[in-house]
Image (cartoon, rainbow, N blue to C red; front, side):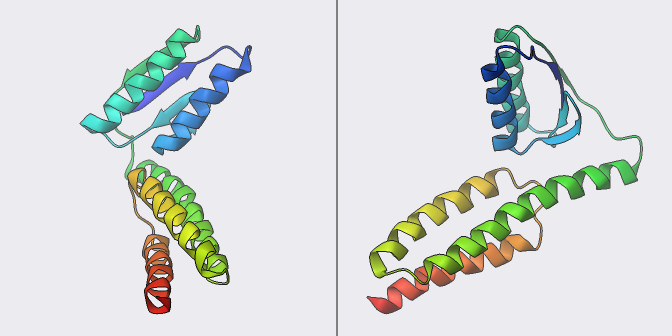
Amino acid sequence: MLLAYRIPREPSTPRISVWRRLRRIGAGQILDGLVALPAGVQTREQLEWVAEEVLQAGGDAQLWIGNPASAAQEEALKERMAETIAAEYRELVGDAARAGAEDEAGRVRALRRLRRELHRIRQRDYFPPPEKDEAVRAVTGLAESLETAL
């Protein structure tokens, strides 16, 4: 699924809102104003919502169904999308390690937050990188350390 869009620069609030929504759903940036998600009912609906937001802000938006011209192009986009998610998983692993040094109440709060964040990342993880397993282990390890302490 492709979304081609153009949104006015001013006011900047709608443009920033669209950018944040695209990031939140895990859209891969192909070019300025052109993003992609794997084809599916859910991803189509997500892009339709973004397109509607663009139109309400006075911009132009079109949804397309398309395929890359080559396997290399497809692989490059998948790798970019996976690397973006991998960076988020690495950050989560670091947060879990830092949380391990906190007192029990701090670890409990951190565990709740990290579980929510892990869930959010997994929702937009279309091409899981190896870092996913490491992040799951880090959050599980933090949970186990709390169970042991109790």
